[in-house]
Length: 188
Image 1 (cartoon, rainbow, N blue to C red):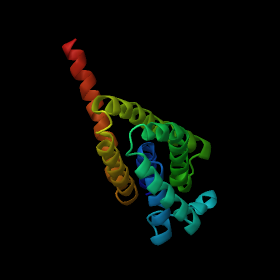
Image 2: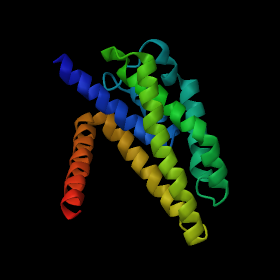
Image 3: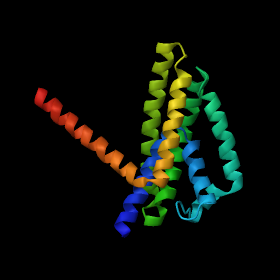
Image 4: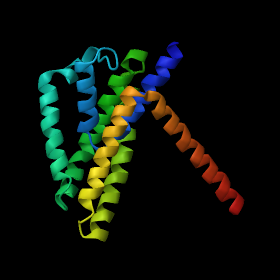
């Protein structure tokens, strides 16, 4: 049973950290509210208890509103992405470490995993956003930003409520990569 719990905690951590790469505040606020308002879905312990204080929730809510508004404006979203080059990986580190504390993963290793996941997603997002700005003259930015916010929200909720789906998603991605490699080798 502990192995199942460990896999679910890791699935939650992966889902939350990757969502943080798109928007740092959505998964942080999701975890804070779920811990504060429910009994058992998320149980923040030790140094992570501060995440579910009402002050933290209030600050995260304000930062989320600012992020959502700023991310829709061309050029301003680029500045926002530069600032979030530090914020999103840090959020990924916090989320991964907080989600895996109960199963005893070394906090430094957990934080590094969160930084890599959120930082990788953020790098792809920031690079893709500049292409969207250049090819659409900025008109596509609000649409892409809204899709990113929806994906981050759905990913965060699924990671907390249905971690099996996160695990299934990652297994499907691995399967697709393997099939793509096999396909490309046969064609070569």
